[in-house]
Length: 433
Image 1 (cartoon, rainbow, N blue to C red):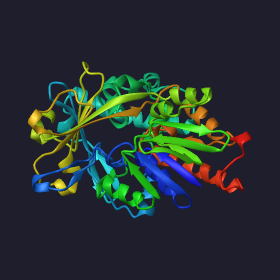
Image 2: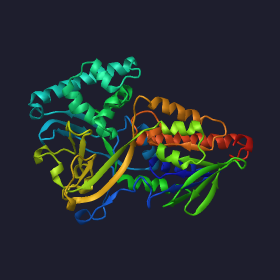
Image 3: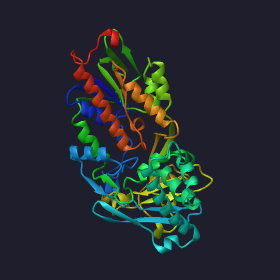
Image 4: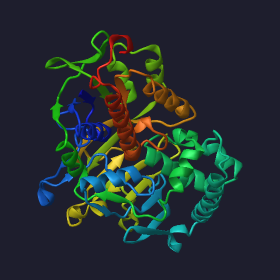
């Protein structure tokens, strides 16, 4: 079959790679390079030629089993990284610091006495222990229902110092959303992430970055067309095909896989049926800004307080600022001048320190997410389907690399099932197109 995959993020690359094993696949990407690496920054000076992922991509095996298996199959080498975190207030003073002792693939979190010398620090630590115990019990009991994490911690009377000072900023940082969005996250999703081993397993990264992952996947894709300029997708009912209108003209395919955001797919699908439009519109997004820079002013005031990850939590800002000390996360930069990546910035670095500036949109998870996913699954189950959707939003859980890869493989399996079930090689009669 001839298949088009629109979007070159991790979901699009995986879907195109998997389907190319049996079919003629064209991957359409709007950027000059695949979306997975389109915003990466190439460095000069002592680290000349080294590239840094934007945004930085890390994982831990307990919550990313599909991604872990994919990297193993591709032969992508990974390495453990230190992802200890400092939490500071708007005054620059540290109120809590979490560290981890790593041994191979395992990690043991701990805090030092000087990190929790204040009453606030002790309450954060005590709240963390209380939350951990209640999270395990609640997940084991399976009685969370549709409660949000805000409702869960209120019902369990978890210390507000922990909730406001660590839990919600951590959720907002991982999911790149506002504190209010974090509070509305389904408790089952948050507890699923927390209980999958994040405190016991080392955070890892692809040793050679997203470029290595993209290169492995691209090598197996039939055809890649960057700067494609896809403007519209429309089904040709009497031919059992899907027409992709792009910069070079119109091209017909047996199937089209949208590996874009749901809102982008909704815009591109010119003949979207009401149930398709409603399903895609149900997924919500939050704008995300990432800055690459060399300005230490966005780090904690004291150099001794710097951690690989540094969260700045201020009541006057709707979302926490997170600054990653790249030198501590990417070994090739260990001896280079300090380099930082700030996510959801509350402040601006010096203009002469700015190395890269990227804007994205990230899916939000809330009370309506389960219904939206059910609608998407119902669409994929329709007989004669020719248009499909995958991405980090398209699977349950925190929308991260894992859900993107899982959804891509699931869609590829459905397309394969259509090919196996259709004697004409995937083409259906006009009455079922």
